[in-house]
Image 1 (cartoon, rainbow, N blue to C red):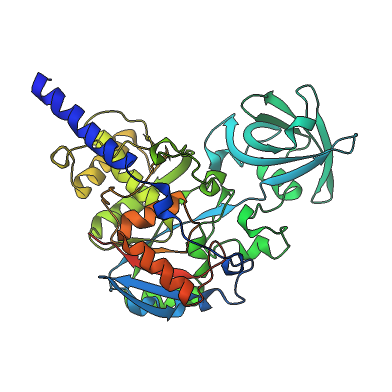
Image 2: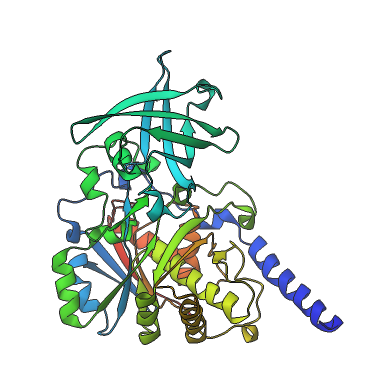
Length: 421
C-alpha cells in the first residue's frame, strides 16, 4: 500500500469515528410514560395500530391494512426463531433461589439449532440471578417430569467467571425436552410482570419455527394467517431467515460514546433459497423487525468479506461496516452472488454466522427499503437504528405515536417505515 493511500484510509477512519463519537445519546431519548407500555397483547393480533411513514408523510391505519399499503412483488423477510422457556429457578437447601437464564450454547456445539438436540450434557453461557448465593463448588439438583418419566437434572459451574454452566440429565431426552419441562418464557424486563401461561402462545409469532431465542422478534407478533392470505393475493412474497434473539437486545446504552456500547453477538442462519429470493427482489425488500433488518445487512457485509477474499468466517464485528469508502464496496447483487459462489464451492444449503453489527445514524443501508417494526425504548440501540433509517423524523414519528395513543414496546403497536435517503 502506498503512503498516500495509507494516509487516506487513516483520515477516512478518523472521519467516521469522529461522526460516531459526535452522536449524543441524550438526543435519542424521549419521555415514555409507564402507562404507554403494553403489558399485554391485544386479543386479536392484527387489530393493532399501524403507522405508515413514507416520503416524510405519516398516516394512521390498522395492521389489517398492511397488504393494501405494500407494493405488489414486495419481498417480506421474516425471522422465524422461536422463543424457548430459557429462564429456570433452582432452590438450594439453604432456601436461596438461583435464577438461570440461558443465553448461548458453548459445548458440545455453539450452533443453537444443533444444541437443542444434544443429549445427556451440555454447557451454556447464562445470566445468573442471585449469583452471590451460588458458590463455585455448589451443585444445583432438581427433578423434572417428561412424558410421565422422572428425570434428574444437576447444574454446576463449568467456568465461574464467564458464567458458563454445565447441565447434566438422566434419560434419553434432548436438551429442548429439558428446557420445555424446566423453564418459563423470559418476558422482557420492562414489562415488569411475571410470566403467565398465555405468554407461551402470545409471545410467539404464528410462524415461529426454530427453537433458540430468549426474546421474540416482536414486529412479527401482529401477523396472522388471514394477513398472510391477503399478502399472497396482493402478490407480496415471503422469505425466512433465523436470528436467535439474545438478551442483549434489552441492554440499555450506558456509555457516553455510543461506539463503546457492547453489542452482544447473535447467531444467524440463512438458506440458499433466501439469498436467491433477495437477488430476485433487489430494490423492494422489507424486513419484518429490527432482527431481520440487522440479519440482512449483516449478510451483505459477509458478502463484502467474501468479495474481497478477506475471510470465509461469518462474523460481523459491531463497527465493521463504517470505515469503507463507497468505491471499495460491491453492489448488493455482487455481495449476494459472492455468497452463493461460496455456498456452491462448500456444498452448503445453509450458512450459519454471528453478528454484532451496530447500526446508528450515518449507516448506509444496503438491502432494505422499508421496515415493519414496533416502538422501542428511549436511548436504546434500536432507537439509533430507527434514526439511521428515518433521519431526524424519528422524533416526529414517536411524537405522533404518543399523541395518538399507540401502545409501545414488545406487545405494542406497529409501524411501516420507509427509508429516508
